[in-house]
Image (cartoon, rainbow, N blue to C red; front, side, top):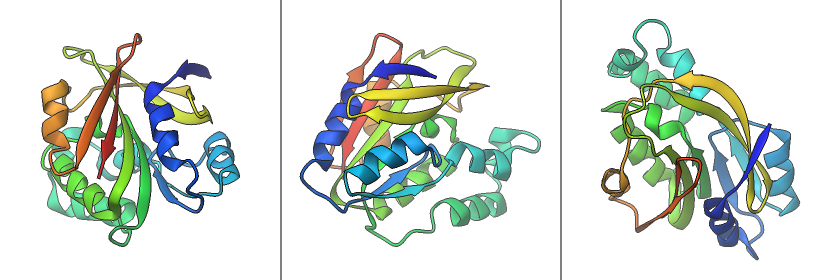
Length: 193
């Protein structure tokens, strides 16, 4: 496992400080490191391996073309986003959004907005290489409040790449968006609902 310092994670963790009992959604799936870090700080964690669910829902055949099938979309959303409105105080989205094509991406953004409470915080990661055909995929883990662990999960073709303007448009319904560009070509984004 590789580790890297993360200004975005530090900012995300500062949102959680002195507020025990928060509901946190994690799209990296369950892993002991993140579970231990968040539960030791008295938060409740809801884990969902969104990339695995994407593969199960859309992986047979053309991955991105399948994402436009209304029946597959409905099944994916039922399995991945059947949470009550305003349930979460924070979300760890990681790099999953860049592997969603339209209109699934727009629908997921609406669902994310809906399940997040006003004032909540979201951390997302985007690869900054705008012309890359394939991007490294990781399973993310919180090591400590400023360190992310990355477990390689192979390479994937992105549905799209995002520059800062594209990210502002993606999160246009949210209250604020803050960017952290890193040396390893990742763009960390903190979003407030």
